[in-house]
Image (cartoon, rainbow, N blue to C red; front, side):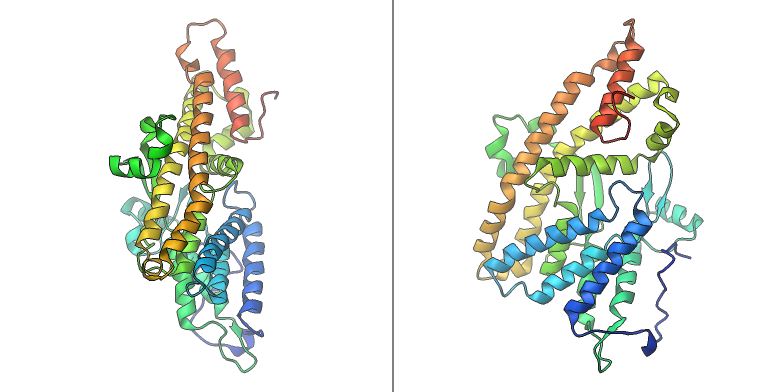
Length: 382
């Protein structure tokens, strides 16, 4: 059976009025749902570096910001109900985080059966897990939505609203290509103005993460939640947000490294430290291309969205989004590049100096400093 948080009771389809919660309106219900998922995320995943209780909060805030920009340009596209649906989906989209533990964790992602490749399905079946995290998170949200009724017993959330919130969670499912090359046309279109003097050309190939269930027909709340989940840090107006989120994701994924560090840095052989130095540098480098791709995918999702395209205020919406986010993407790309090139220059050649007398100490010092750079508890002094 699925591995669910203990307090999640699966809906058997039977109505039991005594289990219902009477509220005045959707706003009151959503406030309770938001509080519930915030509490559960903290209790269930406090130990995770990235997907702890802070992540859904960031997604909620960033998705609401995105939607309100559209709302100011065209109030017909975004209503109070739209904003409430964003809160529900953002709060619950990562409420189930089943994973396999190894040198790196393997998340059991998926909303539709086709999302789950055969090798991942085998791992899930071995653990008695039949559904992907996105689907289980959506089911949990649906169970919560079904609890709320008006004083006369009428459900607070209509079927259409529930479907849209579930679709928003489905849209957060990611696909990966670790060696995707930005084509000439896109590179010139999105980075022509910043690349000439900053030499971004050599970073055109790298990790591309996209959301296959974010469609042209997706609602604004789905577009906002998907954007907030995947692109909010790359489009932040503070590079430190982007840097720290990348560090947190690295620490969360690299469980094997964390376990080794718990035993003590001195237990890790020099040759392995050299390999880990290169792995850290590769990760830092990947953050450049990741942000570049996110800018491209950001605009592709907006340009293809039918609701925005059909709006009489389409140009105003895009201009407002451009003014808010474009320079942020560019600044984070350039600062990620600056960070990587600084670290590469300082640490990238250390593994080529094996003949030097103090090679082991140089590797150890460099490793400790990079761990500190990535936010591990180990510092250069200990």
